[in-house]
Length: 313
Length: 280
Image (cartoon, rainbow over all chains, first blue to last red):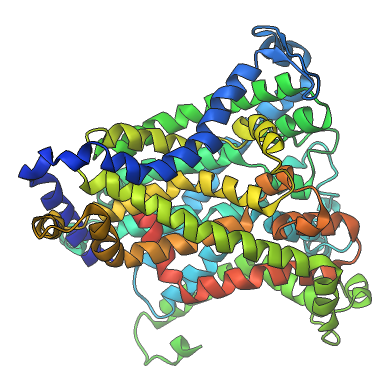
């Protein structure tokens, strides 16, 4: 892995520095567009055009069925902010979810990556075990964890009773005050794999000699982490945080599979509340306005990320 | 475990402790999966009496055949069809685009790439209403064809990202040499660039296949009839219909997970390679 990425860097540097003299090849005016056409066409129709049209629709009052839409300007946004209590619950839940996602999967992923980066017997098996939940669909993750949280038959309550902690047992997903947290734990189980993988890839680009040198200088493991490993993982960390944040704001399936927004809308996220308003209550204007809010929140994390991704181009 | 058989070393107890902690953590981490497998193997009565985390009194394979016949069969084949069409078509158009962005001296390459990247961050909710209108107008609601087209569109950003990451590492000299020999750009693409990119193509196939197999929200919005549902959607539906039949539900989930497990076991290193390509 380390070797191949080193050679990739070399070849890509070579690729970028040797600008060929054939740049005025006449066929190249249109030919690249021809190569790009299928992908750009379907992408523009399926993703970009609906995105723009959604923003426009958020300025109308519309039930999704009537032939006429009433232009209301920013009224939908005002309604959300002033009259829609669930919007605020969802926004708060998104904030909690985001903070949890930035803290838990990233730190667990980093810890596992450091632990499993050293080659010891069985390290590959452990990597697979800890990565595995990441390949499962969130709907499946939600279903599995719903059984674990089942009030009578679920493993969690049974384990608490067996451990003499009966007073801690709960009806985890039906208690409006706490229902969001069990869902976040389940989502974390799924979300650890990606940061772990990215941190492992990042760790393998750090030359062993640096650690050796630090060891010779008398640095302990904690010092080596703080002054050698962590600074060199800065780029990886930024990418991990951005991807985790973007993914956290996309969370939807797992809520749908585990609580369906309940009890009493206490586990709604902006993404699920958008679905409810649009498809269950026919409030298309409000629904698209929520989508725009959600997208704006995503942009906070996405703009630095996209800058980073295009920077090397 | 063989690690305990090591010769006596000063650090031996330390090593043993390290393994013990790791095995314990892995066991806890895997508890949900173990629970799932144990539940799928026992009958409902056993589950009700002894709970999820006990060894089955007798293994009940019928759970799988019953779940399969109650609907999982349809969901499974629908997922196979959608994934089977989406992944190859997607990879062809994404590779063509990525090749144009890397090797064809394309003036607009950076701008087009940025345009494509936006798709990586768009929440699905931002597209649902206009897509519903569009699919309605085209008569593609509640069809696997319609769903596959949507998946291809949403797959473009990640696919272009991965393939571009790989194509950038191809030496320009090879392409220039082929040009000088009078090779057409399309021939260079499919006779030189694509074969050299095989590892990236395999990585993308796997990441994309898993993502398509697992997709939920588009399937939920655009498939209406039960016999067209894909697995994740079908399973959630199954769970609300048969909420008390944990044995069959667990078996159904396991059937959905097994193909993913097989892919994961056989192509594991490609997950790493693919994600690495996406970040570079």
